[in-house]
Amino acid sequence: MTPKQEKFCQLYIELGNASEAYRRSYNATGMSTASVNRKAKDLLDNGKIAARLDQLRATHAERHAVTVDDIARMLREDRELAREHAKPSACVAATMGLAKLYGHLTDKTEITGKGGADLIPTRTEEEERNMLADRLQEAFARFTAANPTQPSIQRETLQQLPPKVQLPSSANELGLGPADLTLFKLSSVTMCT
Image (cartoon, rainbow, N blue to C red; front, side, top):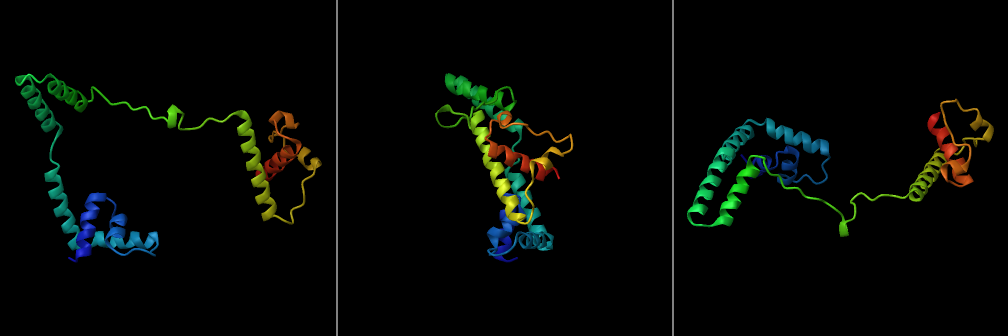
């Protein structure tokens, strides 16, 4: 087995991702994702590498063979030792550790932004309208760029839309200006046809 193959095996056990292990073990710069995936799969199919991975998994399992019962036993021993030496804080810590281990206590963390602000910003209606108008203008610009020969849509055409298409009759219904409303109607027609 080559040193690169050994490194691949070690990284695969650590990461659990063959493609990433391949990238870190071999010079994969300039390779497509599909090529990296194929090479990593080829390595996993190699008999020597498969045997080495089995060996590493067994060693890894032995190191991590500590069970919940083992941890609970250790915490009980620590608690008794703390009682014997009159260390109430250590006794409480061991008791709390047991409670967490058995799921009786969970740590709760409140995540907020800077200064306690919401992480997901809220927008006012005006900000939402402005964002909608910007998006509609961008959509219209993309449409006109992609369809330079497309005839402009007249108001009569808009009035002939099927009944299922509900369009506002005035700019006030959306809180947008007349140009925005025309753009909205044009975008709706384009998206519905």
